[in-house]
Structures are given as structure tokens and as C-alpha cells.
Length: 223
Length: 216
Image (cartoon, rainbow over the protein chains, first blue to last red):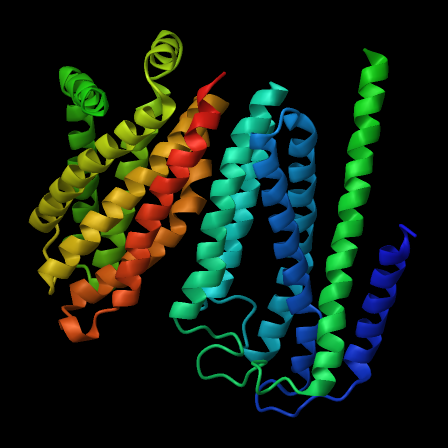
């Protein structure tokens, strides 16, 4: 059944939405009930990173394959879906920050800077694509940029926050979602949420691909 | 072949005295304007930030040109005559040397017009070397992409500012330590190795990816 994963994603997300609010969580200073945001905020970022990874995969395939256009449009669609996930990612993070750090946005945290830069990187990627008319040229150029950009983004959001103090729970001296703070009750919601959101992103990616496919078909018929 | 290519780059640059002179005037002019604006009174973090902003803009300006002029007849000649890997390595090496020289000039004039705040000189020069080579490496590839895409300068800044940010952030952090004159024991060697690793990473990526930009 090819629809299984779609049903599964909806069920998992529904379960985590409800049980994330009802389930038991550890009582921690500062975080209090806002710790429940870990069920929504973190899995959404994971889904975004996953989609950016898919985009990277298809960009690499674009450079290697004989039929670059197909892979290129997939890379683009994955980037669009990933970009879409960054919006709820930022919104949930910002709301949470207002209640725990007392501000919507801060420049003290390397992860926040990293995310802002990543968004700029992918905006640049979209602009780059829009500025080239020739399709096969666009496929090659944007694939090169996408690979380079993905590596730089990962330096920013994976490497740098580990070297500096981050305000994020789990880094620095904050009460944490780190391994010793997330108890088994939370894991029962957190991991399904991660899987659910990733499956959901795959579903969106599929829909985007089908729209592209139909558009191409229509274009072919016209000409 | 490689040395011939690098030599060609230098010859081209020094034959057109207008570009070289233009860059120098650009650097000195920017520094002079900032000195006038700040009236020579900068605290250490501002001194540090301003220096790297000036260096960033200078490097975008000079590296941005490096591929924009290689279009049309030039581009065709290069395409027929050189292998892409040699070409990008030559470009990157040339840009690194040029950028390094330029950032030392920038530092000299910055110290002259504004003031010299650096406490730990050797550390500052290590950072200066690694940062300018890293910038040159990244921006060379970005310039190649921008030249293929539309050939205008706005595209160059849109593409390159976000991707050089990791480098700039690490650089500013390290250079802040140098400016504060921290003893060697307290220096963040993690960051120095990250900076060096970014250099290697950029070179490797340029080397791998450039051949795909090459053919048209």
C-alpha cells in the first residue's frame, strides 16, 4: 500500500499533538510547561533538515546524471518544502523564546543566527534559479550552489553551536532536553513526532513533484 | 601549466593599472570615511567589527570581478585551452594571494587612520591569513556561479554573503580575542582549526564542483 506512510504520518502527528499537551513531562525550572514545545519545534526542524538533505541528494544526482532536468526539479521541490517547514519552526521557536528567554529573538544564540543565515542561503538559491532562463544551465548552476550552500549551512547549525555557548536547552548551563532530562514519557511522544513530521514532509514533497510533472505535461501539450 | 595560469592572472591584473589602483583607492577611501565618521574613537568590539566588514566588502568587490571578466571570447579561449580543475585552482590561489596582500594593506591603513587596537599581534595575523584565504576561496566559486547566472554584481552579493557568514563569525570571534590581547593559553584553538578546516573544505568543494560550471 503506497498510502500507508501518509496515513501513518497523519496518525503520528495527531497523536503527538494531543498527547504532547496531555502527557506527563518533568518539572524543570524556567522551562516549566514550555518543555512541551520540544514535541513540535524540534521535529519540525528535523523535517526541514531532512528535506534539505533530500534536496542535496537530488542536486548531486543532477550533476552526475544524463537527465539532469528531472532531478533538478526534484531538488528544487525538496528545497521549497524544507523552506516551508522553516516557517513553523521559527514561529514555534520564537513563541517559546518569548516565554522562557523573555524575547522573541536574540543574537546571542548561534543556532538562531544559523537558522537566519540558512533561510537567506535558500532564498539566494531560489533567486539564483529565477535568474537563469536556460533550463539545463539552471540545473547545473543551482545544483553547484545547493551543494555548497548545504555544506556551509551545516557548518553553521551543526558545528558552530557545539563550540560556543548556546542559550538552547541542552547546550551551555541551561535546564535541558538533553539525554538526562528527557524522560521516557517524553521520548514516547518525541520520537513518533520526529517520524511523523518527516513522513509528512515526504508526502508534501510527493505532491510538489506531481504538480511539477503535470505542469510539464501541460506545457508539452501546448507546444 | 598551473604556474603559467597564475602568472597570466598577475600579468592581467598589473597591466590594467586602473583596477589595481581602483581597489586600493576603494580600501583607503572606505577606511578614511569610517575614520572620519567615528572620529577615531572606537571601542574594541566596534574596531574589530568594522575592520572585518571593510575586509568582507573589499573581498567581495575584488573576487566578484575574477570571473565576471571571463565571459564571451575570453571564456571560450579559456574553455578550449585549459582544464577546469587547473583553471579554478589557479584562480583561487591567485585570489588568495591577492586578497592576503590587500588585507594586510587594509590593516596598515586602518591602523594608520583609525588606530591600532590589537593586543596579540601574532594571533591577529594568523586570523588575517586564514580569513583572507578562506574568503578568497569561497568568493571565487561564488563569482563563477554569479558570472554564469547573470553576470551582474548584485547576484554576487546575494549568493556570497550568506555562505561566507560562518567564516566571518568564527573570524570575528577569534579576532576579538586577538584584539583583547588574550594570552596564548586562553586562545580558542578549536576556532583556529575550524577556520583552517573551512579553508580546506572550500578548496575541495571548488575543485570538485567547478568542472560542472565550466561547460556551457
